[in-house]
Every structure is written in structure tokens, then in C-alpha cells.
Picture 1: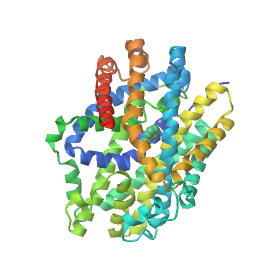
Picture 2: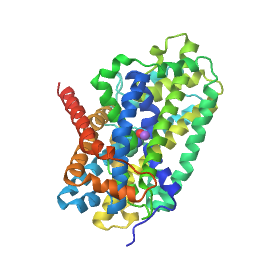
Picture 3: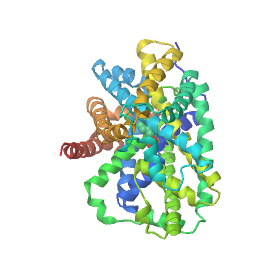
Picture 4: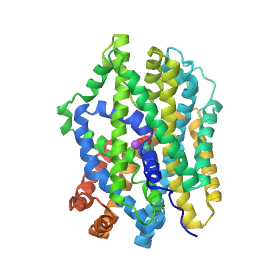
Length: 452
Ligand code: PHE
Ligand code: NA
């Protein structure tokens, strides 16, 4: 059977960008930057992007393109004994898929709430009473399923399933061609309004104000590398699967640069938006900015709703923000599930329709663990493990296998032959020495921190 193909170059780039731009760009990046030295975080971040992100993206695109398979098949073509690495990555992708969808589900709920700000004035109490019903007086148990969480998650699964079931060009590519332009327009519209609010510019300046004392802190570097791999969706079998549908004549280097630069540019834009909003909130509440910022889940579902309460026309800006979050999340979720589905199609020779149905069906059932009362606690745990350990080790093993057992110069020749951009010797240095070294140090530090 002939392998499916993207309909156009723009279609592929939008799909890759759709995978890369996700919840991580909107709620993870701004806070990471803020917590890890503000403007000074950009130094490790850009360093990681240039020396690890771009080379990794080129490498994964070239693997998919050359070996024409999802990760397990691609790695098995390098040597049968490496097939397990592909499955390990598919497994990580599957774990991410089941918890990521929980956050998309919350975003869908909040999209609904945002039309009338039905979260009320105490957004913290609202979030935790809705999603963590474990108060002392609560009769419910840890394992009880919450339908108000399960139903929006089912909606997210339905969208993902429809895209994957329909196929690469008619489903995934088409979904991204609608979602990505929509996302860009929404974010630009939000920024255009927010930037003129009093205090917004102070918030933005705060984000970019460098704290150089943090640059020598190993934690900051670890955060930057972790964020780069997560944000670019590399190391989880995803970009290998997507690039396996590239036509033979494709400019890999160019595609990789575009994907990375659009994603990282979007992160910085999202940072401007979030900190603009926070700056305005600080001004309205006459508090220092440090008292209004918060982390991860709390940022998107506690702080932002509270800020929306204060915005002019909240019934427009609120839905715009949460719709952006939903769209960003769904396009990534589609890519994670495609990585799993395509691996199964390759291995078991199932039809796409059958594979998509089984993968999404099982995924849906497993993800219901996150729709229980204990869901939020479980999510924190899984998220920590994925970001600090699973992801980095998967990337490290991939680098070691590829870089040390294969000739990296072959990869470089392969991509340069097909590109108008020639990448130099630095690519080999990054893949063979610099990135594995950095990853090993960071992973070691994280393991020690987890153990202690
Ligand atoms: N890159 C996406 C983000 O930044 C998320 C993602 C992570 C997608 C892992 C696929 C795999 O949110
Ligand atoms: Na991203």
C-alpha cells in the first residue's frame, strides 16, 4: 500500500507547527521564563533552541523522510534491535496524550464559562472545588468519575479522532489549515487589545527584565532544555511520523527552521500576551506583579480567569483566550495520537480507520482516570515524571543511538543534498557531543533531585 502524503508543503509545515504550538507555549513558557530569570532565560532558551532544538528537528525530519515509517519502523530500519526505542517513544506519546487531553477538556469548560465569567470572583476556589473535590467535607472518593470533566474531554477526543480517522491529508492537514491561521488571528487580536491597557507594558517589561544571577544556575538550563524538547514535540515519535508523509522532493532544512522559528516566536508572543494581562491586573489591583503571577495550571485556570474579570469586554476577550488554548491544544493532541496510530498501522498493517478507532477508544477510556477526583493530583505526578525524566531520557537514548552508531555526516549530506540551506559541521558537533552531554548532565541532576 502506498504511504499517505501531505497535500502541500504549507500543509506539512502547518501540521508540524500545529504539533509544536500547544498548551506548553501558552501556559508553560511564560511562567518558565518568568521563574527562571525573566529576560535572562532567553539566553539558555535560545542556546538550547539553536544547539539542540534545530538539530533535533532536522534529524527527526530526515529519519521520517528517508525511512518512511513511524518511529518504531524507522528505528528498526536502522537496526532491528533499535525498534524498542520507537515503541518507548510511542509509549511516552501515549502517556502524554491521556493527560494532555484533560487540560484541553478544562480549557473547553472554561471556554464555556468565559462567556459570562461564571467562575465568579474567587477563581481559585472555583477551580479547585470543580476539579479537586477532595475537601474535608466532601463525600466523594478519589476514584469517583466527574461527568462535568469527562464530557469536555470526550469532545476533545471526538475532534482528534475525526482528524486521524479521516487521514493525513483530508483530516490532519485540513484540521491544521483551519486551526493554525485561526489561532494566529486570535492571539494577534488579543495582543492588539491588551497592549493598550494600563500597566500592560510594565508587565511585559517585567518578563523581559533580565536577572543575570540566574544564568549560572543549573536549574535554569535544565528548564530551558526541557522546555525546548517539550515545545518542539521532538523525542516522542511525533515529528518522525509526520515527516514520513513528506513527498520525496522536500526541503528538510528549510521545513525544520520554519517549524522551530514559528513555534519559538509564538512562545514569545504568548509571553507578551500573558504578561501584558498580568501587568494590567497588577495595576488594577494595586499589587506588585510578583503577587499576581502563578504557575502552570494555576496560571491558565485561576489567574487568567481572575484577570478576565477585570478586562473590558470580558465576554469577547475571555472566549478568545480560551478558544486559542483549545485550538492550540487540539492540534498538538492530534499529532500525539497520530504518532501512536501510525506506529500501529506500520506494525500490524491495520487500516487507518481501525487503528484510529482502537487507539482513540483505548486512549479515551484510560484518560478517564484524569476525570476523577484524583485527576489533578495524578496529573501533577505524571507531568513531573514526563518532563523531568521520560522526555530527556528518550531524547538522550535517541541521540546516542543515532549519533554514535550511525554516521551523523550521512544525515548532514542527506539533508544538504535536498535543501537550499546548507547546514555546516556545527550540526554534527551538536548532535554527537554537545546535546548528549547537556542532556546527560541535566537528566542526572533531575534524577538526583527526584531521589532526594
Ligand atoms: N509541543 C506541544 C506543546 O508545547 C505539546 C506536545 C508535547 C505535543 C508533547 C506533542 C508531544 O504544548
Ligand atoms: Na510548543
